[in-house]
Length: 319
Image (tube, rainbow, N blue to C red; front, side):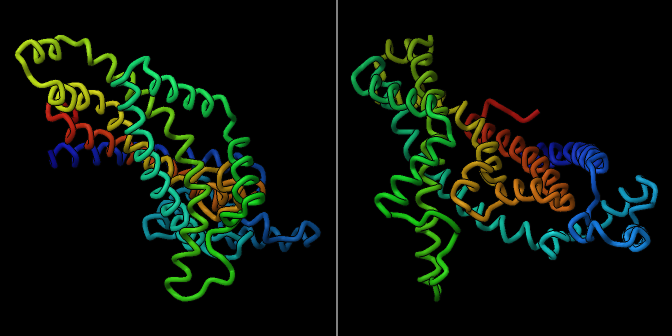
């Protein structure tokens, strides 16, 4: 298995190289340059030309690309002249916040979705199934930004149960104080994000259970007198979980990329909000690094999904 994983990892290398070429040259086509926020529009044109020459922006594109890749390999993602700090440290700080939010959201998503999906599929067309279907329809029909704003307004402003912005309180101090404050700031956005994410898993699992109930191997097991509990757990449920496992890797990496809408509504300082701020502030250096990072996370997510699938079902092997 590890040889197969290594082979798939090596296949990712040319994909990452192609991605870096696309990201770099598409960024070069955007108006402005990496230090747009550094200079004053009323500055002397000679001074602006000197700065561009100093930063190597007048070099040939392929020279700039080679220098950029060389810096990337040494962990240098460039400098954000808008934030006046290195892009690596900027992304690192935001990635920590997004990681904890993603971890909390993933755990809550599967804690809610798996039992509901199993109940809905096992008791097809029953009262429980109909209630769960109403729940999924309501969530799907509600735009995510409306859902976030309603949750923020109800639990943040009206009930005042949770903080409405940030990742930690300004008055928090000490290890336990900081930990408690961070958890408080995680609960509401993480719970709302998880609720929105449950619908797909519930429907996939419910459909899988219903479809597998009528498969030949299930009827054969029942005809042999296998207890219904064993039939459901070993045959129906296990095979119904395969589609869920297939998307698990992409789910994790997708959440690690950060939710632009969620983090913006809650003013949560994560990767998603940093991405949106980079666009609005024309912070091209940070934006380029984030897009490249998102692409790499997507490739890693696909690899994780393949690995998880091969573990869940030994019949499946990574090609």
